Image (cartoon, rainbow over all chains, first blue to last red; front, top):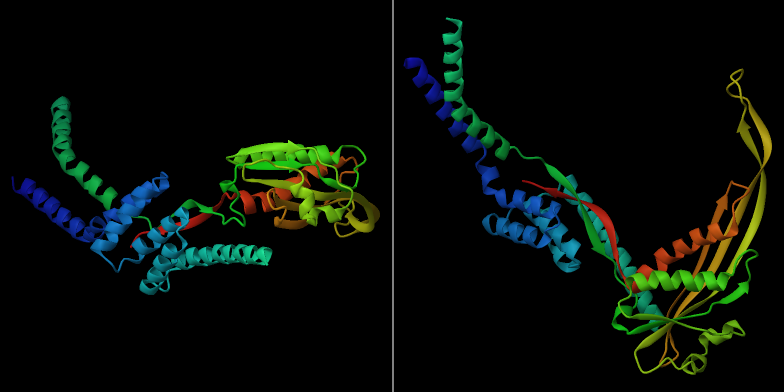
Length: 123
Length: 230
């Protein structure tokens, strides 16, 4: 009987530890759900989830980065730029955000080049 | 006796399983990966908003230098008609046109006189030149056999180079003004001495297509991005 009780107490103790350790992950469930949605091509759902994650925690660099990627996919360049910049302010040393932003900037330069060509053509 | 022991063990396992399963579930749901790579389709900005138009009229091309083994004008017309039809929402038609010289491409009255019809339309046309060149060079080749792995033979090697010069024009059918034009010079060398002209031509026009048509018809570029978790 005593042995059983120890097992139960130990298990409950383990639950409490795991739950507290994962509290952050549970809080950011929206981010995970958004990633899953994006992987399945459901970008609107992903945007909705990451926006919610930002509402809960405006200092989440991950949510801002992911939202920027989604905006880029939608061709919403200004919104994407703002979100990348916010993400980089929150986590300036994050390699993934840096890489995303570098690629985004390259696209933006190409777009500006096309716009310039358009202007030159009109002249 | 043994049977009793076994049944006791089974009972214990059953009792513990209700604890193990939720534990595993919790661990699985809490474990998270740093990043996930996703493919995004980044829309390409178009130079001309050609999708707003009703019709693209493909005309004949002015061929500066005819190819030896195929009808270059026909190949270009067929190629661009097929490609534009795939991504243009309006209608794509062909208009037989004969050009006397290159100056006509800048002559707005010439294009106006072609009478495109009442709808908003543009002419898709161009000037093409295709050439083949054989280049020879003395190159070092590895010697066969394992006597001296560093020794090399010298031999005359031949490469066939094909060059396509293609100036493409988008001309407003109403005003005869050039809306967009771009000149391409694409070149490709082949080691195979039996390489045929039409095959190389197709490869080169494919390159032009990727550069030019995405500029006017739009499209998207596939790129990789990182989605991350905090």
